[in-house]
Image 1 (cartoon, rainbow, N blue to C red):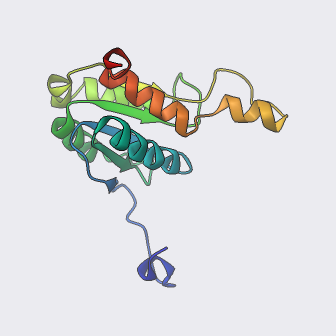
Image 2: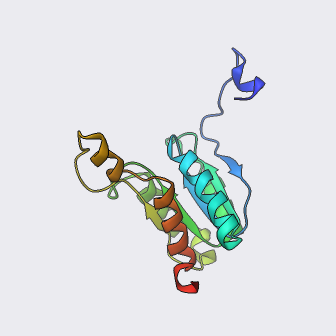
Length: 153
């Protein structure tokens, strides 16, 4: 953590997303623990395919920084969301709706990809729980899908 973040009077700006990694080919939107997976996946696809991924940290869900999302999508023309929640009715679903209802939709070169937890109750066993939520390889597969990188092999 930075010295600023360690300060006792440090306050996160609520409702303001932060670009954790600048990129030009794809916007990956996430929050919380999944940011680590997104940053790791961005590094992997950069090395493997030369793809430049922009990682957007929401930092807050409500309020949602829709202008930052729109600006990033307009810049990269591709979008993917990553969250540990269920596919239906989640943060990724709301981001998709906000993009569809804004001028950002006209900039998309491919449908928005959602990487989410599985549509199952959270398993008790650690091994099964690991399969139920996104990880770095899952995010890499999502990036490959939205950019059509699987087809270029």
